[in-house]
Length: 168
Image (cartoon, rainbow, N blue to C red):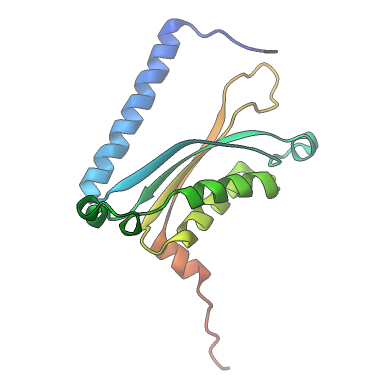
């Protein structure tokens, strides 16, 4: 890989500790809120989002991790698919958005994925999207670029509901 940098083991260990701490903080937040979640990791697709012209023509790989918050207690009791969230659809939708939509910013792509996920099922209370650009065209940089956003169903409903015009 051109421009690859070998990081010292101490740096890699610190990175792993940081990611573990972030995951633990998220898990604790879910517990505090009393919410169940479904976590989908490693959703990959080839897409055409980026500021540079070559990113929109040549494309690149993206990876998405989703956390979907909803009440899973009924599914835990019944063991029926109809009582939970069938995540196959949101995986497919996420891949299709990455493959077919062109945006300049990964923030916009992440937001489009979040909004689409919230539209799939009214039982989702919120969704978190971590979108990573796996090989950003930046000289001497071999890391990933990621954005992480959280959107709620209540905010989604407000933004998608029509506004009433008052007579003047």
